[in-house]
Length: 307
Image (cartoon, rainbow, N blue to C red; front, side, top):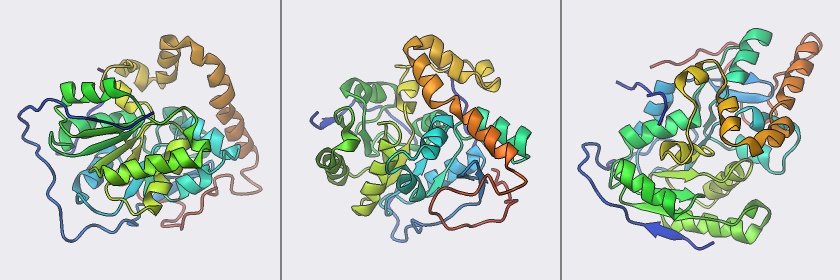
């Protein structure tokens, strides 16, 4: 399994996996939970306010948030998400607007921001973040809830990372269009509270579902991280680090799954047209103004938090 380390000096299936000794241990609940609406510095790029946090700072925020605190969630938009947002995917603005913060999961977006607009943003991919949490933060007895995937995923999480309290629900394909099925997902999370809730059901379903879970008064941290659990468990192979460094992770994915080529043309390449329009209109207007309903925290040149 390739991945970067983050340095921080149907019916519901509940799967109990084998335990192994682990020094991490479960997080102790705190009587004074962090406020769920704590904000972080952001920089807007092509309509999305990305968190100006380096990977270590993101990992530290998630690690230190008390277990049992009111539910918040983190989304990791990439080029596909940005295209969906500009195309007006139903509920997407609402789902992203209510996230605790958004990290950039696209080195292509980072390059576009830096080269075309002089707006560098940190990259914190969902895959790197998920792998770090599984290896260094989530203890074997920490409750983990997953929406998406299958029983094989839950079993592999137990085998590789020693997780013994995995609650997994597999909703049917396209459940986001069904209010009844969406409610089942929310109720499953309420019945199986976890320190971390992985929403692995694709955009915009994951983000809309996360907002519904927050409305319902759940606890824990939601992570809208796409296929990251599949990468962490080896069910999908991630690109070697040199491919990642060259921003060619998308090409490696296509070589693994050629059936995704038509989707690439339809859902990701249009980000180049979005960036081109923004570049051409940059003198007449602010092409980066947020499309989301989020209060501004920082000015046009926010400080980038590091470890």
